[in-house]
Image (cartoon, rainbow, N blue to C red; front, side):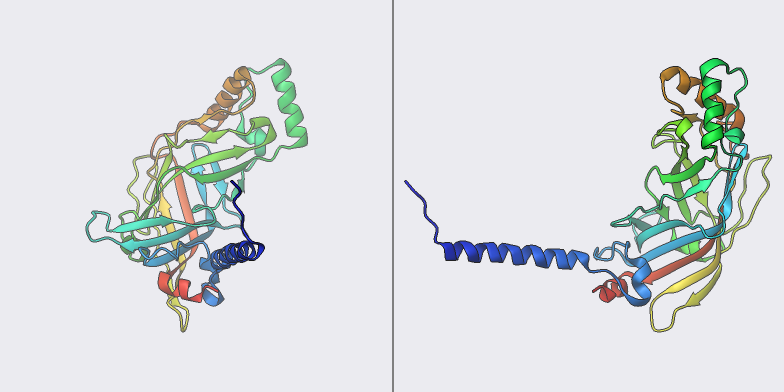
Length: 296
């Protein structure tokens, strides 16, 4: 038995399907405009989200063990997403990750001293030391990139009010990048993250660290919008521990020796009271509904 379909119905069906795909593509391509354009990765189509957050730290530093990595001028460590109040939880706020981009944007930060400053080569000899010297001669630069290693916890009240409780709890792992270190050299992991409990208030670390103080910044409203910018916002934590580096190098033996060299030089793992994170810049918050309304 043959099943026949006339050309015209087939063309109509094809046109209908094509139009549907075109509409879906057009709808998905809609992005916020005007003053709300920076919030384009906020999950603004999710009605459960009340507000969008874009936090850009343009100065500060990370100290992990013996290594201090600054955030240089012209660079921003960016956290973005959305949140809503939840009166039924002890945390009181639900966090929603960014859509279409990283929630914690992967920003490579240059490690001072490069490989020479990062790796202790004491006891090395033969081929490995030759490879290290060749790497230093060609590509000494090492970059440290913080990556999200678990769910973000956010508290809006602690974020905008001077308060010693955490405003953001950020589990991260740090990717150390240089050809000599291989592609999987990390400090921390998804199972053993570096957990930053960042506050705008004052920290209470164990010795030898002493207290440092953050700031909610100065609130500046953007006229005719629901956008509020916290200029000079400063989030700090110096009470966290840092796990050892792992998987640095290539072959198994090289990985053992190179990883050991990184950990020895950088004093990893590093106990609480010997590390710090200082993130200062501008944090912007906008009503999710207004961000969505601006999308075209």
